[in-house]
Length: 371
Image (cartoon, rainbow, N blue to C red; front, side, top):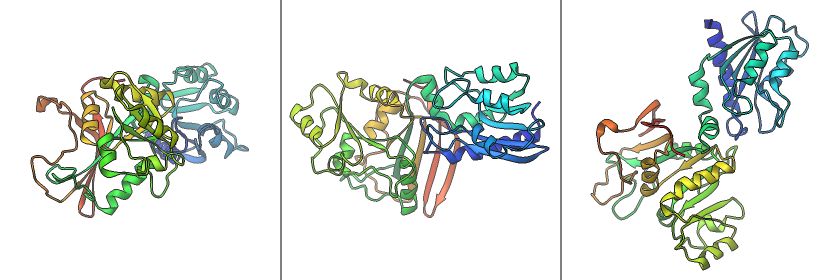
């Protein structure tokens, strides 16, 4: 039975887990707290990819203490297999701990309940499902990768109060304020890839990097059918310093593709132009990418929305009006026919950033996420 104490300490373990964000991917973020008589005696979290797991780090902080009456709180089921580290389930069994509280089961096929089973077979009391939804949300990208073999897709855009991402002449810098743009750079520093459409790359000549640099260095990706990026563009000219991928369809100019390759750009060619986005995400999943940020433009975001491929959104609304029917809006594509079928956000947050409004949340899919 779950007690208030169990819930409180699991919240603490979740807080510890978040410290690993950006450093542990493609592994999940995991936090662990060890408690005796409602007092913390040990804590740890998964600090870096390939490093010791949260349980091992927590046990290391209380090596000389009697753990017979301790409860260990961990946000993800202890692993039960030999990977980059030994199985945590066996480490816990040897520690003498008699009670373990787990937030969520590990969807990784080599674990998937085996860690829980091993603990119970060893006579350890195991309680599961405490703050489960929060744990699943924390590691939603990891869960998406394990269950659907695709990265977690984040859509981001800035728009005026009348829903425009540029004027009718194409002018777009800057819609949002400096505070909003700083948050965008923080997001960029936590993802594996930053993706834009070809027209956005041509119109804005973006660098698509995080300033200052974050814990992760994102691969920059341009989705195109017939790419025509200038060789002196910010992306192409820095491709040897920070990875750049450009997609291409069967009609792409082979000479220009070779020129891009000579400048360090990786070319991904897809024969079915209608499947470029989905095929790209499969390719990125094969590379163990777990978080992908799509920054526009409208055609690319619309294609993702139509294919049920957007999982999370970050939207910055500026108190500006530009008008014009021909001025672009954030999301194109075919769209949704009936308002009653509009996608809703869950776990939504709204913040006031000086004069901007920042809305973020998880997309509540009407059907299973696409792959």
